[in-house]
Amino acid sequence: MDSLGIENGLDSICQTLATNRTKPAQKFSAQLRQVVQAHGKNLPQYDDFTTVVVKRSGVGRS
Image 1 (cartoon, rainbow, N blue to C red):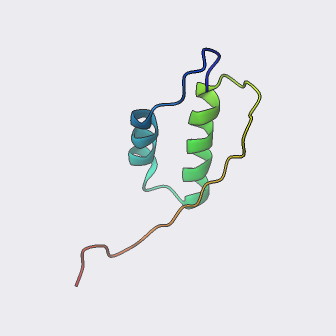
Image 2: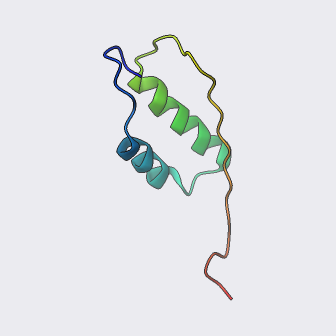
């Protein structure tokens, strides 16, 4: 949440996921965390931040 109590929107998260989907899992997760922290403008974090990244290759191939 930001200082006004507004949660980071789903659109922002989806955009971050789409933009960073080709990056290695560690960089992908770090970028997502950075976006969330930037939204909160470094306010104290009241919950944990857990990210699980699953990458698949060959999706749609028979």
